[in-house]
Image 1 (cartoon, one colour):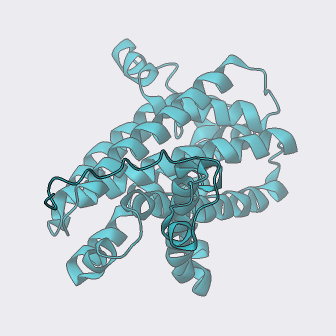
Image 2 (cartoon, one colour):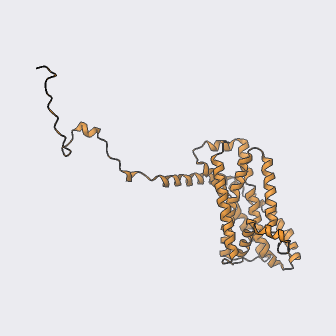
Length: 296
């Protein structure tokens, strides 16, 4: 009988309950416990929050090192208070205290409008010097580069508002503490959204800083005048009042006046809150998208 004619006996069936040899145990793959894996979403959220905090601290360092910049930025609002205050009293015929109740909340919104709309100029400087391009190649997430910068605007806005209110109290300005706190939150929300839009404009124009300032000035002053924060528009022509009603800044100014007066349940507060939140959502959405597609 040849070798090929030999019949190979069949291999006995493997008993799954039988103990395995050391060689088989060493090569066996241990089952993966999915419960031990950290969920992906919390890691992603915590990373975005950590990166946003990093950018926020980076942007706040120059402000904290030179706090006088916040104080000197109050010069313009105080000039408006000193010059337009008496004009408002003579036009409306109301007393100084009543004029301050109307004028000071408007000045706070005006301060937020100017400060937040010009903050994109800082990003323009970083783009021109190459600092922003170096930030883009860091491990930081792209959305955090804009969200952190936008949140930075909250600190100087709140600081300016507190200082302006403190200066006007000796002259007869009265405010509700709770309503004033809500008003500052609403003002900060609006400032974050407008600051994000300002950064978006800077990303769009890149090194053409003259385009940035042209667009900023063209948009800011109509919003300012149509909001009624400087002079009342009740006696203005119908077309002017109609344009004022579609201006989101008008609702924010009316809400600030009601909040500082302690009228938290007024309907204008709801419209002002909706306008501020809508500004923040639109600004952050457009800004994050622009930052994700930025190349320099």
